[in-house]
Amino acid sequence: MKPKLLDRSTTPNHSFELNHHLYSNFLRVWHYHTELELVLIKRSSGTRFVGDSIKKFQPGDLVLIGEKLPHMWQNDPVYFEPDSKDSAEALVVHFKGDFAGKDFFKLPELLSIQELLETAKRGILFNGSNVQAAAEILESMFRVRDVDRFIYLLELLSILAGERKREILSSPGFVDSFKKVENRRLDKIYDFILNNFKNEITLEEVANLADMNISSFCRYFKKTTNKTFSHYLNEVRIGFACRLLMENKYNISETCYACGFNNISNFNRQFKNIAKMSPSEYAKLHRSE
Image 1 (spheres, helix red, strand yellow):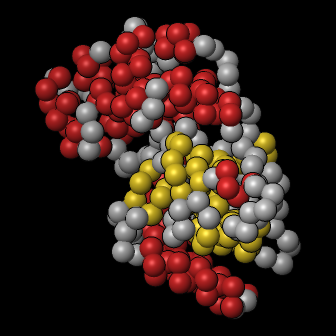
Image 2: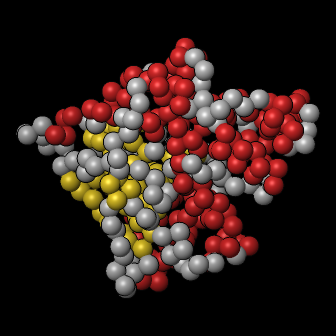
Image 3: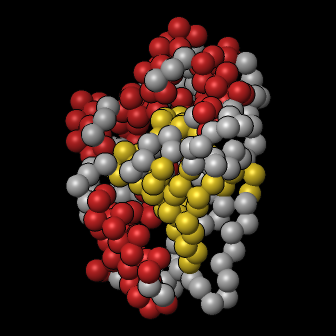
């Protein structure tokens, strides 16, 4: 399933686009665009597709989707019935990462927003206490114009940057990008994983790359990323597997070996652990959608 590029070019008089969507159902198109997208679901429910993430959505969900990250909001079947009185409503902001100027978010006071926009490359669902305040500011943006609307967007991004209770939606293996940390050692490890995850990777290799012994590296990686190296590597591999299954390039057995696993049973186990469904269920769901 190849995503479609939707052109959402802003007008010359505006640096970002604000929309109130109210339809019988959301657009059923697996798509992406060159802007970031902030979405507040006001009404309706269904299944949210962001990268290789497939999860239910409901009213109140607030999601930030990065540039060129494929996504789709698939309403429940009841919304497509001929006599349905249900409706789908969302408040949406589309903006470029440099909408305020090329180097604006590099200012010391705004680095947290820059980090937010970088993390959004994988999609973010916000779950914390700041969501209600963010939603109120987003709604207020429709009642003001020009400078006030611009200031509200900066305030909104500042609130979201400070919200630590967030769920990263898509895996690094699908997005083919990693959240950069101010740490050359980690950058080398991430680059090595991205370039070699299809092959066998040993702890000894990556420990040597980090100039550590194996036990020290394992402690370092867990402390820095909050996950074990093996789990992180499996996330990258399963993310790539999801992409292959979505694009219907290989069958499940071929996908297993193409993404670096050496036996089907382990592949199925790791896939279900990370994607919360079996590879066959994942492939069938994407084909049906």
